[in-house]
Length: 369
Image (tube, rainbow, N blue to C red; front, side, top):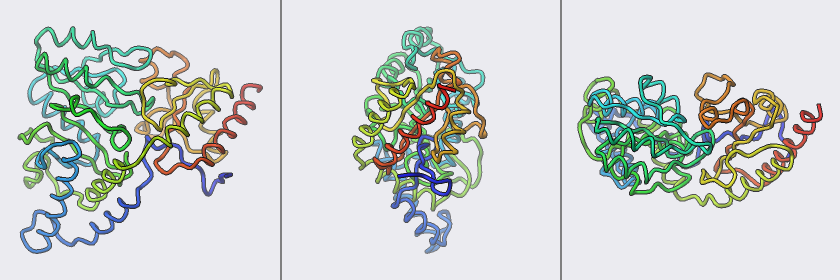
């Protein structure tokens, strides 16, 4: 398989997954629904029934009641709503991991940042020290890091939060549809999800509450979402998200994990360094450094060769800069030399073989340069 500029190979699934067929069909069906879910006439009731069925199906994935699901425009809004409702409104101190997504860090600039180790894992001893002082706290943790794919110690963090009466909010964006969440870890936590990260449409997400409770909204409107989030819901996108969640949760990711591991060996043999080899991580994610070569140079060369990868988060307005995640892990200048390769749900073996060859060609040109 030889990509062209007209048909490049997509390896940036952590930025946004490829739309799943069931999600596309569900969106089209939603677009054909005439009514507003808040209207009481026939078409409104039809739309409302579809909306509430999607809500029930999404909530049941987390073994929650239907009313625990609050639809939002995406995980950024869901994170902001959780911070507003459980942090600011309840006047709780906010504790966040240093490698959290900017959706958390920018929404709570005054939060206390908890250190991580060289593998990107939260320092639980430091978390315990803060929680022991008895100050009411909200702890925000990613289930899986968007840049490295590293899995957080959710069960241990959840146990500490329960022991000391802290609230826990989990950014579950990257893990949904790729790995199962521990029900013990999320038992009393709120969660943020985003439809396009598991093959649904862009522009829709949800805050999944631990229980059906009133929360202070970010903005009010016509009383939608039981007064917790104003505005007419994006019905077509919500239906697409529910369909994508069902389809992604049924996928066997082991073949993709095997392709990822095969590619990792090729990259290491070519001179690249894997930052997450052997660690508990997402099955589709590689974070690799090419020593002495900037991430921007690598991205440009691979893009010209017909391969779409990234450096860090996609939520930085198209900028390529040193990753705050990798800096927090103590990587120094290597933080600006790392690229992320994240395999989509429909990746094929020949695409991995082709990319491996392109990566070898690139390193031979750059390292001999």
